[in-house]
Image 1: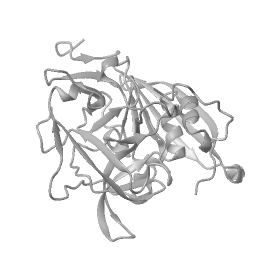
Image 2: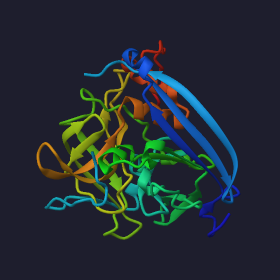
Image 3: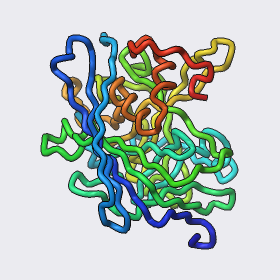
Length: 322
């Protein structure tokens, strides 16, 4: 325990999990995608274990960002959430990274954020990465990271418009965060689901505001491509990595709609089609969605929620990831 009880560690053990996705060409016609990743565990900067993993996922057939800046589109309509509101769901699921970015809880031990918040495409930004949430006094309660997951493509030497499509990551903390914080499960984003025209929301810690203040933005998706969502929600440095969430009908139609995280705020880029700049989020397309679900060990539940997209004979789950 450190910092008056507001920082938890687990012998400073950090594991970096590098996920490498490749299309299995022999199975392309069958819609089978292959996932390959390495899990590298470090203790005080020394590699103690390396594990290679390969798996496949069958996806049913379905009908580029520069992240160096984010923009405010006048008028600035961001909304401030006070200390009381920050303790209420879903605002309580928002966390800050010690690298200056934002993240969102997608499980009690897992935070979804942007890859550039944890890795500079050459190395991990810090072995001592921390994740923190605001308590009711406006102070941060910090947890050291236990594992970091990110796509291996993020480190490839390729054009910005390609590697930036992989600007997403998951950070795992060593122990479960208080159940009172809540979390927003991941959701699938495809052309006919959570795409163009949908209303989206995100909350973050912008650099132009006090560091212990959260500000939210909402707008409609103006354009979408298979890997990206384009929009004009106001965003600035510090909000990178925010979870983009929206509403979705509950699988039990007698219940109210539920929130799902369907993307990650990455940056700002020029649209080739419309010759204008947008703020951009990496969307959880089917392969990215399953990637994230594997990282948080919820693959079966994730598939059961969208069984029409994953032809694995999965039996629908009654809890729908709730």
